[in-house]
Length: 272
Ligand SMILES: [Mn+2]
Image (cartoon, rainbow, N blue to C red; front, side, top):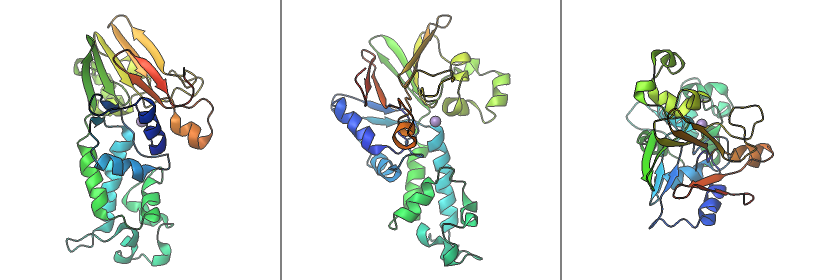
């Protein structure tokens, strides 16, 4: 699965649907567990619980969230080696009055929080401590950028946005991804299939939802598939844009789960 984006309930419904058994099965979440959706804390607590036989991979939203967590730490630093509570940080900072709390944009100078996730966490859950954000940061820093599995003789590479071999990561690509190949793994769009892939492999990725007409991966909210015969490489884009349908009303959005043994795709909505 990929791109859960704070849709914990739907994620759990999918685990039910596929009858996930951690004693026999493995679930790989191909990045982006937070942002956009409503249940970010539930996803973060789930990650913290280190669920058996569940692998988390790095997504661009997880990567950014690491930075936001660092921002919370800085915001909460009282300067005496202690952290204040995030919800009370304004009390400890010069030039901030309680009335300026969360609604004051200056308060957020410490991190960008592009999707308001941190703001919702801090304002919605008074019990959260700076230590929680520190812990999430540490756990997410450990997320690998891709996973490789060989199943029934097929080589699968699971990654958030796109996979590329280091030998194919040319100089001109480094202008698009100046921070290096890890940036390709979590940010690639069309490049995922134009330059990406790997010989004799199947790439399973998400990141760009298949629900927006006109985009290269458009597939009407179904899993998108293509092949590169030159590399004997196959591509599955499994991000069917769940969060856009659930909370932005986009038609045909879905959560997909691909079972690699037989490449059967399970959809949360509809049974196609
Ligand atoms: Mn993404």
